[in-house]
Image (cartoon, rainbow, N blue to C red; front, top):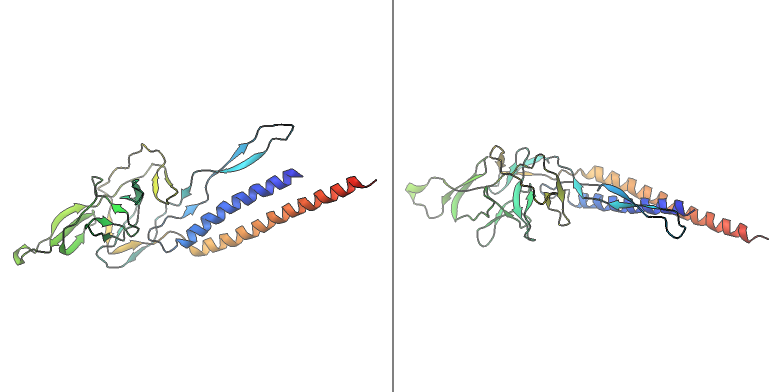
Length: 252
């Protein structure tokens, strides 16, 4: 009898994790360059036989994974909007201070003129350093990440673009990546080095959509709810069978 309950409880545990993943995806379907979370890998933990109890297996949630497919590029024509054209990553420093990878390209300047993404992370240059821009009249960001400006105080004879920094575009091909609890992406191996790749390209005036498909997540949520109900009913059935068995044992 208890095996039926264990089976149902294990299923409920996994369904709860799957529902959390689906809800996260749905709530981030409009977040710039968000990478869809996928159901974490599950493994089994076996309990040793103890005190004449039959060994049991429990589900254990593994490393969080995500979908690495690129999202659709949308045109904005805003000079501070950039999107990676193809594979590649920006290197950023989130508020936590732990360096991470991101595809988010909705750039802004803070009060110190440091370049940040829309979530407040500092975007890094080809040398892994923050980018601070001087005041400017105009700005252009080349497809190689080079930032060119016409200085604000430039005279009429100085109306030429000047190179001031180059945004790093990093290649993580062949490197296993995972999302942390802060939802930022980093190599699984802490010692792995993600190199800057000058062959990768970006597009100014574009942003990358989330790669989440809301309809898929809604369908998944409905299926999860159905399976949850099935397993709850299984536990109720096990309880009814247990009560019936107890009643039979009490009959003289």
